[in-house]
Image (cartoon, rainbow, N blue to C red; front, side):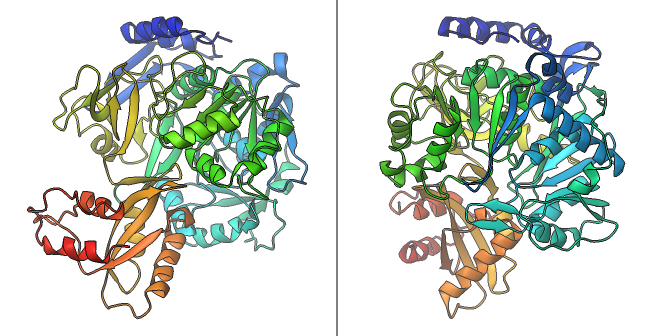
Length: 631
């Protein structure tokens, strides 16, 4: 295993090398892995098409690198440490040897049920070890996994299954989440009414809920496992073969299936995991994310297992049975590295120190945040009350599309600064541009954040829609990947992310497309048109604020608000429900019909004095009306 960067001077040398000779830099990293055939070419790229290829001609399987190659040295070491939702339920430790065996068995189950290389398989599961096992089993046989977060609705699930034409759905009878049971199989049944490509639905027993099983289509995981053994050779994959699709909300209503490749993703997630968190042999690492999001893919499953780490999975929520749950788990499992979202930190801070003080957090060495920029108050609380002032906090900036952490301090190695992601990782070449795409040089500047050179873990396309991939990420600014975020660079060259500049909200660290929420609301018979914006929320970071035009004046506004949010829950998921709904007679639009969201954002934020120029609006009077009725 390669050594981590250990001091700031070393970081500067490594960064300089990665920029002056990227191919040589990444070739050296690639040499740490098991390959079946060496690559012919390290990199070929063209952002105008866009086309990016890393380690072309190389052949490998990512699960051999996650599992098989560790068996001799660390076969008995815990690979996955699983903590159940209920505090009194037995947790589970899977060694590398046991995980390898279970992955092979389930890979054979998939093959028995017709799965083959290149098939798309959808996973809609709770946070149990079998989710990680299923992900790795797909990769072992060369099938492309598409994990859908188990909080999404039947409509969101069917949309994602149909977009990727998945032939197998893996789900569970239900999932425990806090005090609730999510009826995953019932939701899956509703989704499968309109998913003609699904041939088999494999069901894990978790909650022992009463469910219906359709003969010929639905099969039990536990019954299928009895039919197989643990001998499953790897499928040889090309370096550029797709590894997974992960859907993220777009600025149109149709979700985007972000497609990641095999080798580049593998090399970058392992390298970034080790260096950002300064992982060392024997550390207990816990990322509290869900595998349904990119954070769970890269930093619960792939990154840690590639590095031979012990990675923790938690089924529950931070507030169940009380707000001390995270800290109890840290104490009981002697967690060394803890990675969570600012939303969770703010929510736990709001509950007070009575839930923190009873627990011994002295095992912690590194703290991390992910999903959105962390605000200064939360950063200082996290530093003082959880880290006791001696745990570096890594404030990681990255995206589903980037595959891995792009801008972050390396724990205890490079400087940190509250609210700043700080410096790019080696191999990452960020730049700030103005509205015309001209690069803004120097420090103490602000602009739109772009990348001017490819990195190994970047997405290769949007599944089935390369044109949209180009339009979304590569057409705004010539020859650059546009992140969709604004950023500033301080006097020392450190980056701070200032937020989205497109129509995507980050709520509790999750990307939500405004168009997807609007189209759900528009389904209500009394809703004529909607506009969604974000507004500052003390816990979530951003809340969802909806401006709604009705066909008929609502007789009962509260009842209508509930009906509208019920539609959002049904079509998108409860995470996307509006925190505030304001009924209006019109929206501020330009003469070309474009909604001026910056005006709506300002009003939602309570800033009605600085709305900027409204003279270009078709009807400026509508702004006064919205202001006067604002909540």
